[in-house]
Length: 385
Image (cartoon, rainbow, N blue to C red; front, side, top):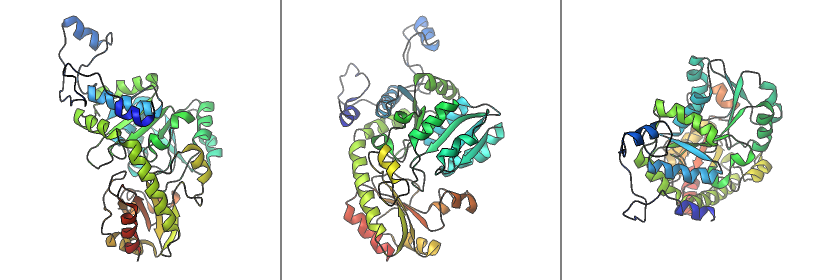
């Protein structure tokens, strides 16, 4: 079956009630047949449900759908995207280990690298996204994980996944990709050698700004190690959120297609607008990594970044003049969103660190929603003027 069909038709086994839509399993624990059954489940001698911090039918369905999308063997769901990211590092790293990461990462991931993991003796070395050919020079015997986002947040820069895959294989590193901006509809990092793929399911998977979640996809061997860490540290996804996210996935392919179309047309129009200094969108021919984007992505995604002429003050004026677009800390929503990364998502970075990854004071990030294109553009155009 095609992707769109699998997302709709994949579900856990129906109960005796033969329900058409999967029910919500709002239970914290499960009943065992007898003492032997209980012991067998706890000792992994049989498959089944024990406790919803470990697993739940709604979570199983959600994981199955996304693993199928990402072409991985299995996955593990968490309460948020950051819980997923932290669980990977918690499961695979020990004191003295090092991470090699693209410099351009989400603000909270940067704080994790620079302030939280160092407390346990884990160091992160940053490399520039546009210098992949020389990344291997920064690897040493303590480097265990190579981590990146592509497209990056918020600069929508593109990193060559296949080239990085060669580097990680040659050096025996765990290759981890945050695929949140692209979604598996547009890009499948495992096809380029990624060992683990991470998503903030709060974004495009939910798609309507309702709930939170995260997920890690990979081989059974890698996910088993994450399972051992997560079961006992508790970053569990709730059954209700898993049920909501699984239902949302039924429309993911359709929604991403609309996000792609709206974002590309907005980017093209912004590029021609006299009030705009520059525009970046992966599928614009002017994007510095346009050819790489076209080679590894099916669509350019729903995020457009641009600089309003006049810097910070003009950027603030633009945001304050918007009438329909939401000013909120999210993306991937059905509603179009505008944010100012320098003062919000990446405000905890120093100005020097922000400039290193292209976050200028006047940079605006637009998450193109599902409204009619002309309504989105009308609001952007009037705010620019």
